[in-house]
Image (tube, rainbow, N blue to C red; front, side):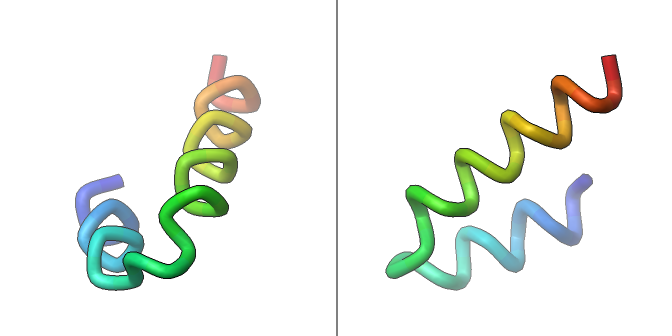
Length: 30
């Protein structure tokens, strides 16, 4: 999760997409 987070933070343009993907991943994880 840490590497992915850093990768998303690096890309500011896809911040919205990153958040949505993170939420999706979290829901799948749970």
